[in-house]
Image 1: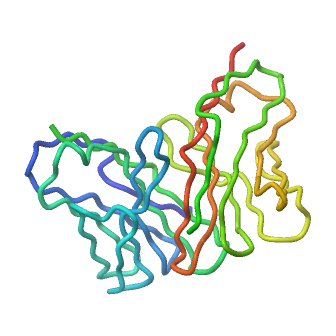
Image 2 (image 1 turned 90 degrees about the vertical axis):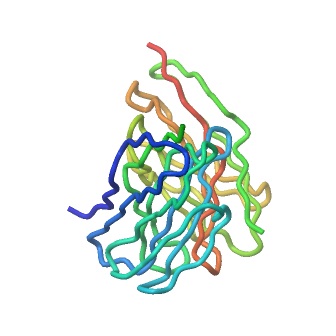
Image 3 (image 1 turned 120 degrees about the horizontal axis):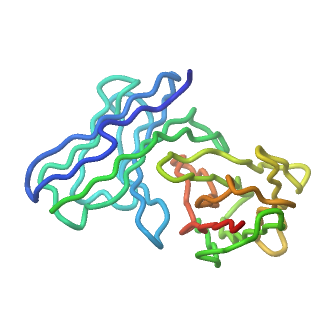
Length: 113
Length: 113
């Protein structure tokens, strides 16, 4: 089954404690991205990757890092989480190109206290 | 820059009644338009998309959307809603040259018996 898998689904952590949210896709997609979803703001792109070892900032990259060492994996790293990073995070993948469908993971709800 | 506006934050509709969700976009070229649905605790699922051609697009779950270039709109409709249609709906435009999708803030649909 074609899917994007995120882990963990839920996470509560303390300010400053480094964490990683994993994302893996089994569709051999070149393009992957991370979004955060906040009430009233919709989804905003954090980082994206066009292919292995190619990453770039989205609209709200501050406080986040990513890496793309393998095509299937695109982890999101919060080096020093802060309460304003409490949000619902989605990973997505797609074939690059105008108008292609993005496939989304089920989301990771992160709470930073 | 591309952007999407969903004017309605929350809509309540009776089961069996019709539903229309509004979406207005801003895009510099021919838009690629999408509607996604997010059911509680789930990721985003594509309902339908428009690239070109017939301006009335059919999607899954009985949804359709109409592209109106003159109004910069892409409204989503369903003739008769079911309780399972209670969800949050997102309109999106793009991708742009960096393959980013821009999402609206979302419309939450509540279905009453």
